Length: 253
Ligand code: NAP
Image 1 (tube, rainbow, N blue to C red):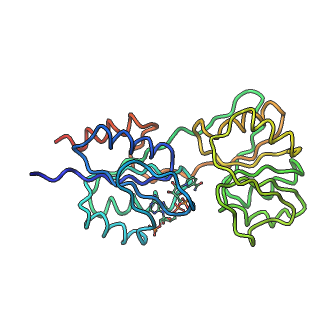
Image 2 (image 1 turned 30 degrees about the vertical axis):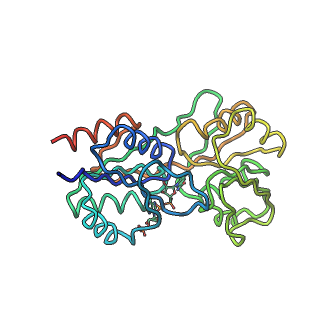
Image 3 (image 1 turned 60 degrees about the horizontal axis):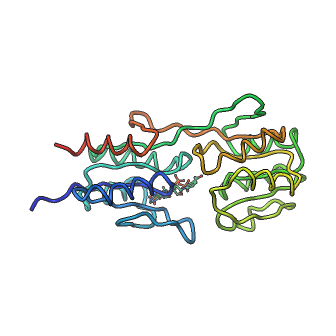
């Protein structure tokens, strides 16, 4: 019997879970392993085989790809997981493994939006005091340390797991919650906490976009982190059907 082609699916997103579900139900001819970083205490697990934890940099990933005879990689990590995406590109090049990036489209501003786009948490922290006093932060735990630069502001910090206590600004409230969040709930969060500026990053996708609509309706400015670029030379698709098509083309011969 011939071995089924092995696909490594770098995950941690709802698109990665959707792709894993499609592949495990329809593609008995493939072996699929989803990989999670292990950051979240109780992750939503994808269908099928799952491994958890870092690979140990580019060399660790190269070893893993070889040891597990991986035929193709789909990088369906979050658009801001830039280190993993870069490592995947380098390891794919070194081993000659085909690599695809599955990236949901970025959000774009519309009439009535008051967006201020920045590249780094430090840039965001420098801008915030000019825009408001009560900040709703939905950038994830990694960016919080930058807000020591604006300690006079009050922050409502929403994250899935609690941030490191040392990263928290002096005036804050924690909101431990996992999306999706609907428009009514986001309106209520802005109103109840008298938010006057929203800080977020351009994750894209429908699960967390209602906060942007709620901010537009309320005339609240938004500081939005731009996405890091996908590593050069890596083909990109915006959705699960695109990834299924690419896998079909890569593995059908
Ligand atoms: P990152 O900064 O790009 O990666 C840091 C290190 O974490 C990588 O070098 C790798 O360790 C490990 N890692 C990351 N993703 C992995 C995966 N899918 N499988 C195995 N190891 C992984 O990543 P991050 O921004 O911390 O994100 C971590 C995970 O959370 C990702 O899977 C991402 O999809 C998910 N996520 C991230 C965000 C975000 O805003 N960044 C939001 C939602 C979900 P080694 O070098 O040891 O291999």
